[in-house]
Length: 406
Image (tube, rainbow, N blue to C red):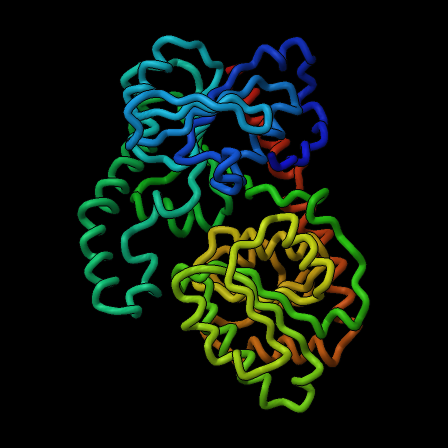
């Protein structure tokens, strides 16, 4: 069995004593959760859970999985997990006492059971992305072909419109003691609220945790500015990997290109097609597979620049992890990215859909060692301040205790 690193104890939030903290029992409700056979399924939720445990909360997980016929139980990394359908969740909410319910992905299957059970405890809902967006937000996938366009139009009526109405009703009617958490202010105000046509007046902005202990800052030598890393999914066009490839092709025309080394990592149905033009270059390494967090930490140590073009990001976790480790993030000045990387202060931002601008940013770092070192250090410092444990899971724990105490 794989050994999992335990999260270090967090500072006490709000001065609550140990006896009270240990009595706070919470149920985390998620659409997926890791197991020994699926280690990386919603790992971002598991990292929160471990932090909650270390802080003294008594945590159980309900993995909402509609296809299962009967309840299943397992323990993963000292976390008790129940797998079941919506009716199982409703029965559990009626029969067990929890001080708070923590819901990830605000879909009916995980919230209607709590309404039916008429729970009186607070319900904190994390809004992550697709469940709060209008159907057209992923426009960049429409260019893949007629099948993708047809699928998007079909989902407009059979998922997105219904889901948007459901979330709007939650926000406006408040059938439960609800609080909402968004990972960025941009996402709440520019996507969620316009798309559901409602204002979340008491919404809380708490980014996803970037673990500064795992993604520790390591001072970079100037030579590492020549080693450029990309770790991105290739399941859709969201991450603008095609722009990244075009930028490398642009750099191949410049006299210093052979001094650069690119490591391109990722997996997905588009990997081979998008990266095909790069096979011609001996200084470009292509790795079409999934990389664990431990492997990504090692990649961070061996590189100095992280390519993070995107077309849509509510935060950009891989970019933030790289910056925490000391890599200079070269990203797109779009969506929520400027909320996490400030141009020429903690990274470099370029206009969207511009391979030449992306190539120019890499060129600037090539010629300016001082800028590279400054951005590397400040990028890590600012990322810890914005997304480290004090700024994320500590705030979540304080919010949980505040809502329980009300």
